[in-house]
Length: 401
Image 1: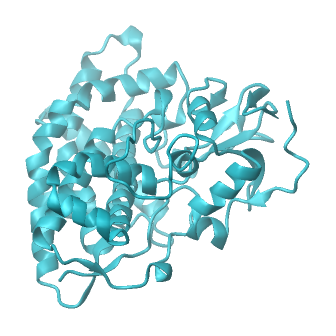
Image 2: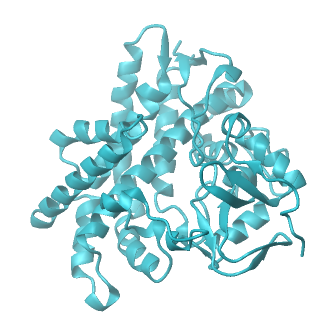
Image 3: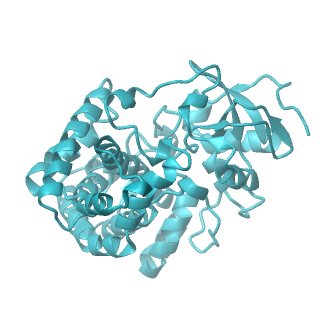
């Protein structure tokens, strides 16, 4: 075993990281594939960058999601006080199993398939709005963001009269100083909606989740109201930003690879494969959610001590040349099996089929309506959001042609 603490840790922050995480992680993968990094304002963490190591780490039960294991003492999440943090993403088994099981039963492929025509209508309405605009349009603000926000409202059974307001609340989440208010507003809204759906169920995921939970064997552990509210919040927020990033970064990737764009225009049957390659190539998140070692463990020949904070770099794994030949080349015909954009193991993203469907609809509609769409800025002028977790653009200026 080796000790990777001898070299001064680099910061998982700053211009080099936020504007080019692929290059940042590639340098670590080649020189220090498992190493300590600095998290400004928080301390030190370990980062894992190679595909084989990332996949193994995502499934390792010795890496916990429990914030009470934070190095130096337990930390609380501000969202806990607002009643939206008690969900499966923050839990280990057996709580994770109890929290995930009812969602998994309600989040069926059949439900997603039934939602596709509605998603297509939403995309068509947004495309109509794009067509009415002149000059340069921010595709992220006008298309990539409102589409998943509206689809998620449809999925959860938000009444038609409330959808614009709920979608607008979700869209405020990233605005300066708005996070706490958005969490409070959504917690209050979903508490009311859960009560309404319990009294009068509909044909939606939230009603199915409530019904399944109420009928569950008490010995298996039913979800509390706070856990139901937190789960609804998770489904909205986890399904929003990631899909926004997939759509916007996916469009950018195609616009900067005109050969692959032409290939997709000529053969729409490539759409499902294109979405998988765009997931691999763009990776909507920079790293999996925080993990903490419950005991000393070895990853990639490096010993990580017990009680350490571990960051698992998904974009790095998805561009590891040991797993994907010529990984920095967009190739809609490549074998993308094994990409880790949705994670791996017990925390594998339940919303993966929904995100895939939305991306197929969004890209297909855009190509159908605007075959001449082009980038309205030099790629190097575009800015990526300066946040650790999400890998997304600040804007995407395009000309629709």
